[in-house]
Image (cartoon, rainbow, N blue to C red; front, side, top):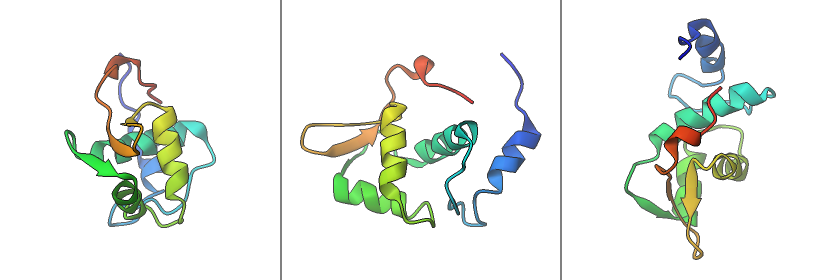
Length: 101
């Protein structure tokens, strides 16, 4: 397994303010994947959220006003999942298959 590229992590960390909120969406996919992993780690495991509550949670983690972009990207990466009645939760299944930057 390759080591952690600390210089790259520091570069991506500049996308966040001092309170850990993302200031803008990165233009590079590799950076956005790392940002999504960070946000995924903040979703409480074992807890479900209504769509409204999940959107509010995502909104509190960024400053660029597009929680739907983050939610969609997390869902496409299978970091989160939902039921038919729009209840969202952190996905812990198939962990080995999640893409890593």
